[in-house]
Length: 243
Image (tube, rainbow, N blue to C red):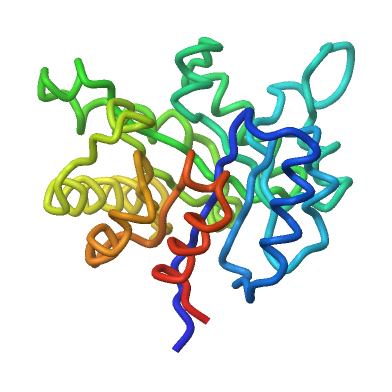
């Protein structure tokens, strides 16, 4: 039976054009599930669309179109057949000071243009140590999902990424992840009357994926650094979405 889980590769601001060409040559030798979504740097999106997998953009503007130098509109992404948009990643929240309200605006515009949304939520180490994880996650979800209609919600995937685990090699225990995902699903259903997929992200690698994949209520994984290396990413895909 084909896995219904999802694997998202967030390549962030990595690889040159030459490296991307080589990456795709190696990647296309493999059988890839449509449940794999690759999110390259924006300038490389045209290299990825039309392949065996789905494609996501790492960010979209909080504006429809216009004089916003350096930004990319959801409508522009959709026009080149991008499938998904990552919105609310902790690096956007932290480095670019994106508030919950800005994230909601981006979600609204992405859904309007028929892009599916990967909504990232997560707590900082300080918030975790202060036992505020659930409070923070609930606030992020409540603001992000506010005002969405019944049909729009179906096009959202939640990605839980504890900020303190991203790129650090530190990963919560399977029990911690299970309990947090269960809480997120409960809140999402309470807010939307829907059951939405919830992914885990944060130092997901080819060496820990077998352990992480034992968590029953996780619907897939958001992979960062490991997605930039074909061999490592393929090992993750083979575990989570085997052909």
